[in-house]
Image (cartoon, rainbow, N blue to C red; front, side):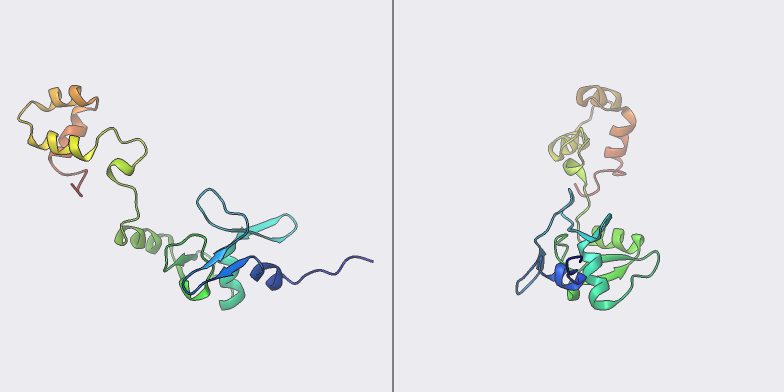
Length: 150
């Protein structure tokens, strides 16, 4: 006789710590901090998506489950809402969560260097050599096509 199967909702909510704000996923997290849940053998799903399905119903094709709280480990249903990739990107920009400036992993310039570049009276090609970037990069800094936040 096979052992009794624990229902999915019971297995899922047993891995959640409920606080007054977010409900934290206590199971495995991926590298981005999102919870992972094994729905059935060989099938894993993001924990916040499972929480949404359990409490609000199916997720329409092409929709994402987004967080009002911006806490990737949160599975609290009232913090979750549906959106598109575009609305997710717009939300990220509006909340200033996107990487920019020095937070971009491959950035060669810093805020201090950008300010010095903009204040310099030297030729762009000379500035580029000084900072190890292209003349086009210097032009983009000076004309404020990049580093807009500085």
